[in-house]
Every structure is written in structure tokens, then in C-alpha cells.
Length: 309
Image (cartoon, rainbow, N blue to C red; front, side):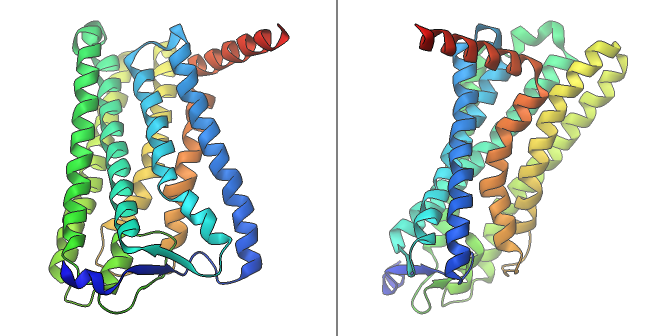
């Protein structure tokens, strides 16, 4: 660990070396970040204030929106400040903190999406036992488990990064601190640590992704026995979940399940899962879910009435 102190800060190359492009990017990402905060906050507020959205499914949905806000906030504010500066630096410990919390909230989202798939499986395949199986006590236990799982995942990642000696180059060709750029800066053989990191992050992503796909395949097969109206409602809900799963997991698998090499497309792929996915989450769920749309309309109506008073 002593060797890591030879480098006290890292320098990001960012999205582009062109100052004009950076200014345009600042405006775009500022608007996107505000949309992420407002959109996901609206989901949380709608679920919390609406009696019709009192089921565990909407509780998990509001939790997902909260996690999306936290996840994007570990990266985007630093990106915005760097887009306005020529020299984009981050202290060593700031880099490690960003790395830890990014993987913590990403792990939380992975486990939460898995829990949401289980919730939909029970609701559709075992509807008579749903309130018994997915009660509020179970919800609290599941939330506690996913936080613990995410913490252990992130802790194992950061402990592996702690083993890397940073004693030479400190320029990161990226806009945030992540596994592959840090592996490239280490001044030692990173093959074993790289494999362990891939085994941790990549395997978690792939296994969770496969479990989710199998879960939704079972749900879709079960829907053949439902009425057309029941099928339509279930497909609308599951369609939203599957869309979010694909948007989040496909880029993650592309980044983390491969040897420790960087590709030119990595930055754009990273933008997708750090900015675009948190942005699309509230859009997908609000547009595809009739109950959420109705609750939002009621919230808007109540707000307008209060303003009139």
C-alpha cells in the first residue's frame, strides 16, 4: 500500500480535448443530470404520496429511482466540473472513494433488479400467495440483503485495487475512476488482480443477467394461461423491467467481462450506463405503467390546487 502514495493525484483526459466540445458537453450533461434528479425524484415522490402505489412493486421502483440518483451523482457532478477546467485532476483518495461508491450503487442496482424480477415472478406465477410471500417484513429483509451484498461487492473490488502500486504515470484516459483505466496505470503485473476483478464484477453482472432473463422467460411462459387483459397488464409491467435490465446490463457486461484492456468505445459505453440509463428509468416506468401515470396526474392536480390556494 505504501507504493500507492508515490502518486497523490490522477489526471483525467475527459471526453474530448477540444474546449468548444467540452462547453457543449457541459450544457448537455447538465441538462441530462437535472433530468435524472427531477425524473427519479418525481418517481420517489409519486410512490411515497400515492395510496394506490402501496404495493411492494412500487416500493422497489421508488428504491430503484433513489439508487439511480445516488449512482449518477457519484460521477456526473465531477464530470461537469471537469468540463469547465483545463486540468482535470482528482486526488488519489478521491479517486478510490469514487470507485468504491460507484461500484456500491451499481451493485445495489444489480441486486435490486433481481429482487424486482422475483417480486414479479411471485405476483404473476403465485398470485394467491403473493401477500404472504412478499410482505413488508420480507421487503425490508430483501432491501437489507441487497445493501449488504452491494457493500461486500464494492469492498472486495476496492481491496483488490488497494493492492495496485501507482508509482509512475497518473493520466487516466477516461472521465471517472474505474477498474480498467486504473489497471493500466499500475506499475506491476496486474494479470492476477485483473482476473480477480473480472471474476468479481463480470461474473456478478453475467450471473445476475442470466438469472433475470430466465426469470422473465418463466413469467412469459406462465402468461400463456392468463386472460388477454391479464396478459396485457403483466406484459406492460414486465416489459418495463426487461427494458431497464437490458439497458443496464448489456453495457456492464461489455465493459467488465473482458481482459484488462481499454477500447475507444469505452467512454461512450460508460456514458450510456452512468447517464443514459438513470435518465431513461423514470421515462420507461412512467410511460409504460398506467398506475404510475394516474398517480402522477393526481399528484400534479393536488399540487396545482395548493398553488391556487
